[in-house]
Amino acid sequence: MDQERIATKMASSFREFQPAQVTTPVCAQYLKQFAATPRTHNMHRSILRQVLAFAALEGLREGYNPIDNIQTKRTPGRRRLVTDDEIESLKVAALQATRNGEALVQMIDLALITGQRISDVIAWQWEDVHEDGLRVTQGKTKERLLIEWTRPLRRVVEACAEGREKEGHLLKTQSGLPYRYAGIRSAWVRACERAGIEDLNIHDLRGRAGVDKLQRDGLEGAKDLLGHRSIKMTEHYVDGKSERRVKSGRRR
Image 1 (cartoon, one colour):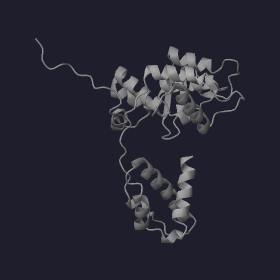
Image 2 (image 1 turned 180 degrees about the horizontal axis):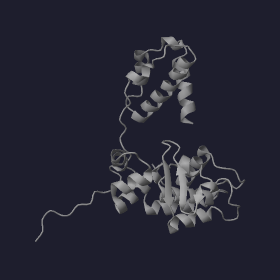
Image 3 (image 1 turned 90 degrees about the vertical axis):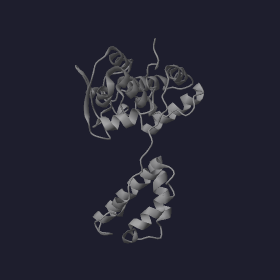
């Protein structure tokens, strides 16, 4: 798990320091090693900030947080877009040599249809299923959405109930337990390997959903589905994920 690896790295790097000795220059020097990888830099910055905030609450250092003087790094948008052929190959691979293949297929469909984060998809429960649609609260932003019913959405939600009672989580293992993120991601990685698909992140499903909605209903529609708070966020998220449609220049 990323957070565990970061915590181990951080504990080793700061083992000689008392909390009150950790200053902005000390933090900057630590983060310098991640300068070439913006996402990694930002993850370490975020966790270090939380650690120092906790130390301040415990009275181990002054109240200010030295991380506040260090800017996050801008992360380039991911351009990889999962194709229809890859989706079908993944579904076939998911059903091969795995007890929980059907749940992985359902997760793929739910993510593509709803555009929500995987951590939210695996957290949905039957109490979130209502007459007018799927009511969700995004874990990251706390945005509340009503994803209205379409035939594809209703079909995949009903598939989640086959052979089960409509109680607890929509997505469950063969043992009837809810999925943990590490478990569903591991199943995804194995399916990608069996399908021979490279450089495909489980979060690329949300990117594909955003692009599909953009092409159908424009930026505003994509913004609403993804739960973004501004058009600018959506523009950054979908930038470069699909071709820009243009007309030829010369006509007769």
